Length: 443
Image (cartoon, rainbow, N blue to C red; front, side, top):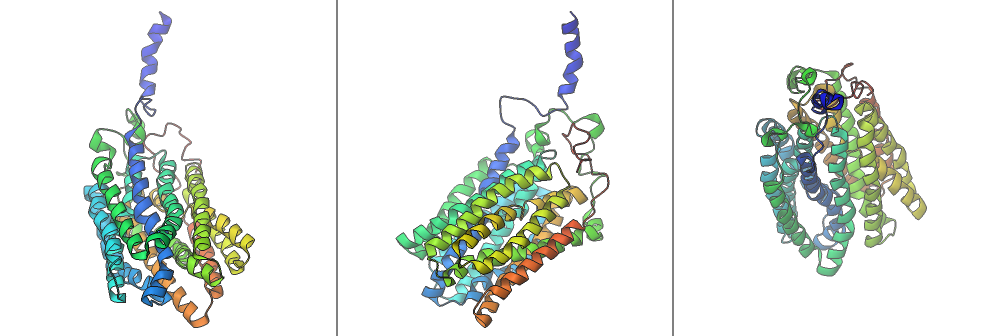
């Protein structure tokens, strides 16, 4: 009788914990969708595309600075205005529609690049590709995952961003193989077709913008605890205007501008640099894949650390490690030094994008996350392509990359210092679904 009488008293306690159901919480299917979006729209494009650069130089006569010129123009023409619009639209109508609208702009420009013969055509298609990246890439997927998870946000973001890293692992050797077997034009066309064939069905049938659309709560909770009934989107969140007036926002922006700009310089010029060092195109693609395989471990570890420590400290640590490993590129003529760089830099690079929304949410909540994230992405997108373009100009002037790597390393250290200087709220907003009262105080 006692056991029976005690059972109802324990039942309410279960409502404060994630539901233990036979079925998987749908948020993890959304993470899988984000994984695939990032695999194709960022991993394949961002890391696989540089494998085509030597073919553009030899077949079309492009200069090295020309490789980044179209994306640089796209960052200014598309990245800033559409980035801000994208963030605002996501905050209003959700990420799903935005992602679907961008899929065609990711795949179709690659198909058309198989037909290009002039630099102006390449530039226009790069601008179109930038639009696809803006709509289907980091902004939309980071907000998407942040809406579905709170207490396990870092872990979920880490798993989603494995897609970006794995796409980078697969893309360089796959692109090299397709180029050698079928030529660079057919390889580009096939890439575009595959991207659209995968991402359209995923967007229609899997992606959902928020758990509320399906009558669910973040993290798979069965019931919101009474003491935590006020969500992040209410009083504990900061408005866009308030965030822009804070030092924290500008420190985050400066840190990402420095570090992600430097990372892009490395990834965009890595294959060209290794070919200058007398590595074959296949060997260069393999080293790039090693770098990106290593980043997979960094993404998972960074997500788990971020759920236990302050997000901004985790981000500053990984950014500092990126800068510390970059000087090894100067000795890339030695395979051991190059391999060491690929592993160390890749591991630290695993935290490149994924920690940004976590730090923003830690400082400002999620009610304006889409808009704030779009502003940060617009800022570092400019630095990425300005940096890559300047690196190409520096090579044309000096016929080497040594000064480029030194400047990039210094930029990473400066960026890490900016992130470390961020001061989040002394008492972070409660995360719905966290039953451990110390879960975020410990951060």
